[in-house]
Image (tube, rainbow, N blue to C red):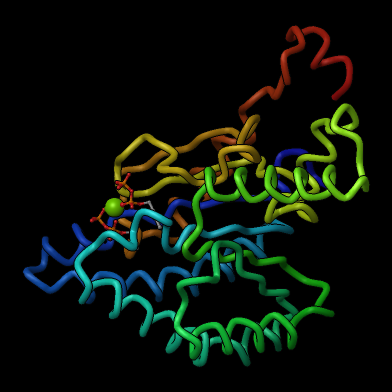
Length: 242
Ligand code: IPE
Ligand code: IPE
Ligand code: MG
């Protein structure tokens, strides 16, 4: 594994609405164009040797947007999944969704489950799409599950450690992101993977998500390659292990 290439890249795909506004188009036109950028980044990431890609498509808080926007987004998720699944499968991509499934339309949920089942044995890029996902929700779910296991006598409270906790999170089977990319100019986490991003390198760009492509991704990788990851150690210690 090339240490200069992040094993896991997480992306906050932001700026669709502003992309549309600049063109005097409705917000959903920006989301539609954003779906095209998703297609591109999946290809580009795989070409560069990234093994895990996690994309923030819809947050727990995005349910509070105007009803029409939410409904158009859900429609777009269904349509995109339908359109892309054959090619993703052909390209050996394993597709999974993270987030709360409670409020998803049955039609979307069916497509999600079918896509996950169909691609579950694929050995190429592991693609996680975060829909109705919130970092706090994820942590609360994990805590609730652990509390249940303690009540059942399956685990003792004092045996709960980082590893036991992480095993209850949505990305239990996936290593932590090495690189977080956020487009659209904001420099915040917006309740994305709060636990898992503990030691991620953070890269922000002003490019709006629909315009994101090879140029920006290459820049992010170059930024990542220049970082020294110390995990709390001194620079000398970090150099000694690398
Ligand atoms: C990101 O783009 C997509 C979602 C959050 C669903 P936005 O819709 O947030 O675009 P801006 O930030 O308003 O430009
Ligand atoms: C974060 O973008 C969520 C997604 C990209 C899906 P938002 O546009 O919702 O974030 P805020 O509101 O600017 O923090
Ligand atoms: Mg936004």
